[in-house]
Amino acid sequence: MTTAPAPTSAVNDVDIDAVVGLAGKIQSEPDVAATTWQARVTWHQGFRSTASIRDFEPIASDEPAGLGGTDTGPNPVEQLLGALGNCLAVGYAANATAAGITIDDLSIDLEGDLDLHTFLGLDPSGNAGYSGIRVAVHLDADATEAQIAELHEQVVGTSPVGHTLQRPVPVSIELA
View 1 (cartoon, rainbow, N blue to C red):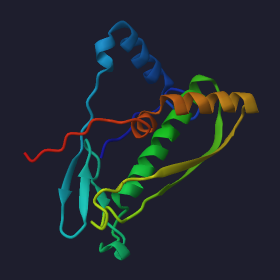
View 2: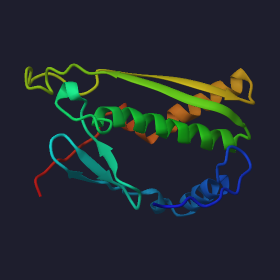
View 3: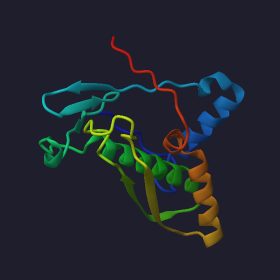
């Protein structure tokens, strides 16, 4: 497991110096901004699999018993909601810190609607994915309502996972 370095910023435990340093480097060397991220998923029987990412412990995935799984971990569509929520949390922490806003409490509730017809092969022409995702952000911070609204717009406008989910993204899936 990777151990995080001690933050150098006193606000929100965010190492804002690292973020500012990266932004400065990208401004002077734009090619540095083009990054590639990776994960490897390994199947373990039934609907159980794990995702290995960098040097972290593998992340378990399974389906609930009602969908034929053994319920040993969150399923992929739940993980997608978690990824969006985690990405937004990073955005709030980074942008609040940059603005000098201390976050006292932050929680993000996410829910999405799936129609299982296509997943189960009952309607091959349908949509197997979410038809909608709703997010409720609960933020308590030392800021005015206007500052929090501005922070919220900044976070929503810069979330990589949010942007990915809100627009068509080419996906190539091939047998290797």
